[in-house]
Amino acid sequence: MKPSLSYLMICATILASAMLLNSNAGNADQKTPGLPGARPEIDASQYPSLQAAFDALPVTGGVVRLPAGEFTISKPLVITQEDVLITGAGTATHIKNENENGEPGLMIHPNPDSSEEKPRIWRVQLQNFRITGNEKSGHGILAKHVQEIFIHGVTVSYHGGDGIQLDHCFEDPRVCDSLFTYNKKIGLHLIGCHDIIVSANQFEENLDALHCIDGFNLCMTGNNIDDHLQHGVVIENTYGSVLSGNMIEECKNWAVILDRDCYGNTISANVIAHNGTGIDLRDAHGCAVSANTFTLMGEHAVRIGPNSGRITLTGNNFSNSFIGEASVKRRKNDLAAAGLTLDGTKDVVISGNVFSSVKPKAVEVVQPSTRILFTDNVLTDVESDHGKLQESRIDNILHGSAPSEK
Image 1 (cartoon, helix red, strand yellow):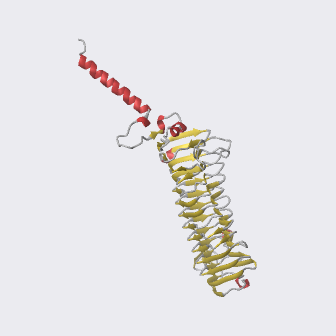
Image 2 (image 1 turned 180 degrees about the vertical axis):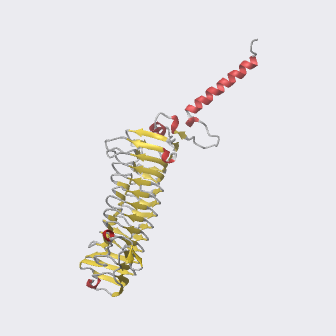
Image 3 (image 1 turned 45 degrees about the vertical axis):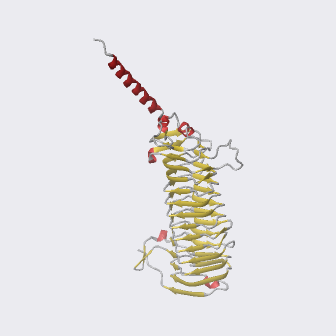
């Protein structure tokens, strides 16, 4: 029996629908949203490369969703659009840079063909993916002149350069909840940025954890900084900033450096433990160092140098591993605990601190320091040079004896 005309029409309709669905599956970004004004999302899994997916972004911006998987690249991925969100599937999305010519993994910058005198792009957000490199690759992520950049939930590891470098991302950069590990240079490098938030990140075994250079208004809070091969936090030519509530442990050299005309900064409520050296105020003025805990520092828990002055040092604790009952937690080979070094500085208030069992001295005066107010401190089981301070008021409590070892 011959098929009826209606049967043939139904079959043709089904076949056409299947072909349409198949076409849409290969071009997911071409689906038209039902909501007026909505832009279609770009599913990177439907493109031949990640760069092709980024290139599909319209000039008005949009969303690129990165699937789970390992994606090997040999040249930088580039984003030049603004109002962009790049989002992955957590660390299951792994971008692996195999370039060995010092090139970055991901570059974000204005279109080089822009006719603007000072081109900028605005509002780029990166989240939820992992990007790795090798000893001969460049930075993991390099962003230039991107305003209001927001990076969170990103893992950046094993790069030959910096983990992330933000170069004159001037307006309101935010870096939160990310992981920086095993990068050959700086975990997070901030150059010429202001109103910066760096919060709740983890930094481990980079050369240095963070540099903030030629900026202002850095708010760095609640980060974990561990095992760095050189320094922890280096801040230069930056003012109006706060470094608080961070754990900085086992940096080989300095935990914190303030240099090159820093002023009006506060370092407060940090735990600075078991580093080679602590806080170095090399060229800092009008700064406060307060309520920090310095324990088991190799030397110079705090050093105030000849190019620094007008410093307040108050409410800090300088200690070894004393745990009460005339005993210490650490053994003989791990009892280093340093105090305060004053090296030709002036106009400093040192008040309300505890110095206990630190060596060689609670306060060591290298070069004469003037106009120092040293008052209401507690010195226990220490030697100290505070009597050498010039034009100073000395009003301290000294008591105690050396604890025994377990």
